[in-house]
Image 1 (tube, rainbow, N blue to C red):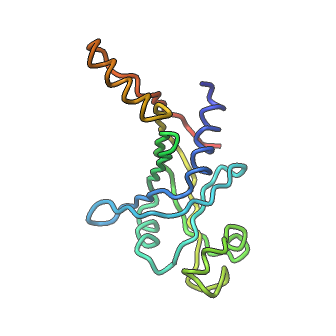
Image 2: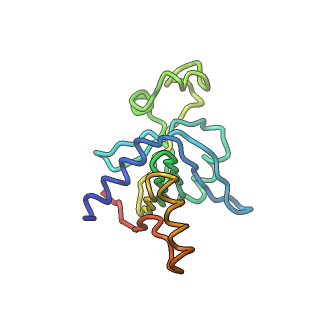
Length: 163
């Protein structure tokens, strides 16, 4: 695959999967939690609507290097992104990223004083595209058992996604 196709594939997974695990660093180690991504492919950034009062905001201020993990189970796509995070307090940007479902968490809407955006500037992405079906996976395992060769479980490639 070409570099452009790799980068397009990364963005396709982020847009299709939506929810990922965001991993931050804290004094005791690493912490991961699920969040819904709001990708901006044109800007090369990923945003999350979140609460300014959560521990992740302090963790990001102290250590902005983060990890994101997306799993597209329907097409066996696995994506890991590393990048730099920062906290954005901008009502207009929050409004642009806002979805009606966010009102469950912040009934005051995008102007709620506890709402903020996390902006992720991706630096690298590693993705694995597996066989499209469990039948194909089972076939590869059976073939490997018979031939003694490793199963072909898809392609792993690492790409730089700085855009």
